[in-house]
Image 1 (cartoon, rainbow, N blue to C red):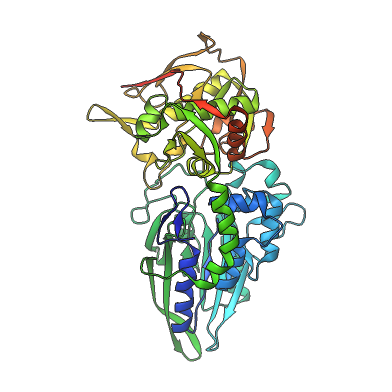
Image 2: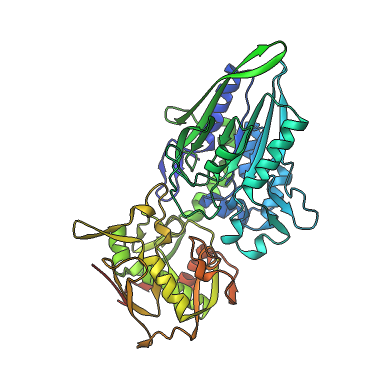
Length: 504
């Protein structure tokens, strides 16, 4: 819908606007291909409400894409957030194929959710192949029970195999790779822009795979157009704020088609009418979602609003204190880890509604209690401390957490221990005076720590959490856990326990 759910203000975004664009394109272009590049079925309160209250109905995102008549969708990492049944239902309800050549059934080793590629032949004989792959890094973020029986093969290796196969078998005139992943290197200089974990392989795909004409990308929420090794690349941001358009001119010599020109561009959705068919289709669910969002859930005594996200990270904030206490009560652990998820979080005013909760906690994370050594905790604190740097004598955000993709959610704040971060020290040697119950943290002792499932599986390159013993899993998403906390307490007091210091 063309709104921001956190504030309910109108915005030129969303599939209702995009649907109008596609209909206009179809009127003016006979040879059109429309592709969704993943992360379709999760990301708004509307979908959270659908999963909780209406999951016996058609998935609304699929219903919209069926009406738009897209040619193919690609599996994104967030497709798994609501569990296997929601995803399988979405795939089964789709009038279009879901492509992901590297997401395999662990038993058959065949693509799990649909064909690895499709071909489309236009009336003039031009043949286009579209192959889909997905970042194989999903097991580093997703709850294990959501991805049972699934193998995530290397996206680069899988794409290379299938591009070769398609050229040999299909002999297309145009080959489009649609990759739910992004770029690990600057597209102009080739300089790494992140740790080369394999999460993003777009640059490598362009450089080392022969036969890709267009590489559509996503996942990083960036806006990119350009060429890498003569492959036209495109990435159109996130949240339906923009769409990507590729124009291909073909020429024919002796009954053989070849590409004469390729153009890529990004377009925003301002001055675009909302599509009436999609608006009517969404009317009931949208109305129910709005009622749900406006329900008062609890009350705050004191000030739990966030004026300055940076200050809420440098110094303990009552909202962070609240989240820590919710996590500790739900889990029984006395050490908790959380983060301020982004710079749009506003905290809570005196009356808290579901809208306030979902706008501050926008991910369907569950909670996990891990058994960690003191050494693991120290390593994690040092990883978090890398978020800061010093600029002109002031504490500032390390640019690596801002560009090329904002990653403020990868700075963690701890509860149940005390510690000091010295930002001017070198990375890896910044955290001192770590105590637990007033005594120095024992690097060999085991501690129970509650954190969200994304972080517990090593998300954000927190390698020290990977494959650690799981003491407990709380299989409810964070929004539900927060709601239940308010249901029990009714009124929450805005307080802080100043257990950490960030200083130069």
